[in-house]
Length: 379
Image 1 (cartoon, helix red, strand yellow):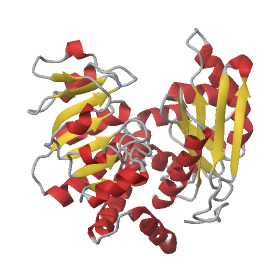
Image 2 (cartoon, rainbow, N blue to C red; image 1 turned 90 degrees about the horizontal axis):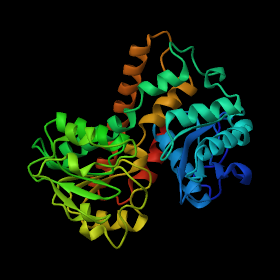
Image 3 (tube, rainbow, N blue to C red; image 1 turned 30 degrees about the vertical axis):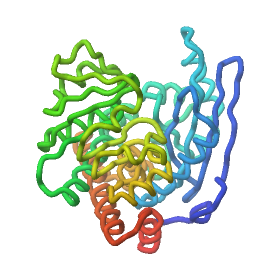
């Protein structure tokens, strides 16, 4: 990595943690900058009803690690907003207030994009309110399309990267045979993963959303399932074939007999007290902080391969980071640039996944510190 990180590796505290409040606009939130490289940092903006400053701090630290493993000279940050009320206009008012409050940070080098609970249209709204244009950053190359259009073309890039991690780990651990796959979380990432794994000959046998799990040991019709799913990742059960079993409860997916488990929803999905219920041989963190430290340790004790989020869930971060730092190739058409960014993500995820498999295969229980130290030494 080039440049000088604003916080020594392994430091306990972030560089900056600030609260953003505007009661009149329904805004309660935080921005945490974990590290800076050459004065810049980046991360997503999460909007949920339960987000806390501690959660945002953990996510910002994970961004620092994720971007370092991707070899990008930019620090890690994150924003978290509490979901406002449900009255018409509540969401827009809160996002506009966020843009005004976070504007100085955005213009000062802290890029805040999308994350759980926010969409590209939300990001465009608070960018406009902040008077922020990412193309004005000195290191950003001249782009063949405007920022919003380009990012819209990258919607599936995180899911594509998670699928590469799953395919790489499955082949290493399970050989070339078709695998049974469970996907926990069927939002943008989960749907992209399911489609990609199905195209590669694997069978998606279970999918979980906020209302339970749908299961068919012979394989779910992924395209039909995706067509029956709303933007929040909720599946309309009435649109599914009678052969699909429906299970209630938020953790029924843990008990599905499967080879590969992709976690693509909220954090702490697998905990120390539920890790023994995992039936898969390969677990891929397609979301942020999906396994607690206790769960990760227990999975390692059981001989289950875990590909951590800082390796698998890097697609959008790596693509946007490459654009912001001038690492993306210049002078390409929009189509060519999009293809090059997908290739960049696939190469990054595949390399880091293979290194994780090598470290864990040699007996390491937590591969991230060793991998991070190696990447920083090689930079």
